Image 1 (tube, helix red, strand yellow):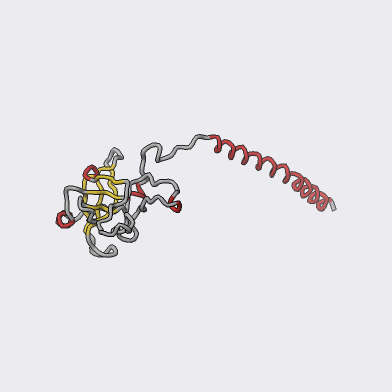
Image 2: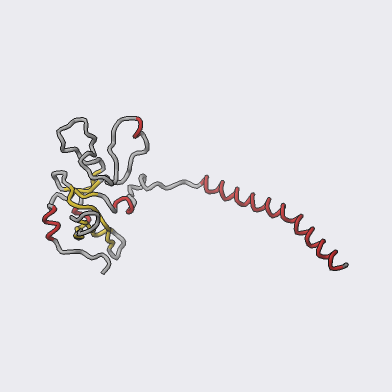
Length: 175
């Protein structure tokens, strides 16, 4: 009988403590939430930084607005600075591509979509870009009134053609 009474007393005390614990936990969470709302936020766009995930996959064009490849990787030097961009040239759906290393400084970054080379004035600015291209045309209609993309739309290599890139030695980023 004493064992049942002791068990009932422990159970009763633990049930009365639960609301107090829940209340303390809730107030601690709200204090944390308020503190994070009061903290200033840093924005990559304000710091002139581009997410590497947005650079990888960008199309690379020549000076005639012809696509010559896309960026498949970025290589850092020991100081943590981007030294080389790996450009994937040729191939179809990733088969038969030829990866080459180019100096990051040889790429010119363009924020606006590639200008259309078609004669139709009704074609959007991105009409000559392949499907899946990163970025979008910046038109003035209300449907595209969201925040402007702060990373480049594409890269341009003015000193190399697609054939010259294909002739460069294969680059293997994993070795």
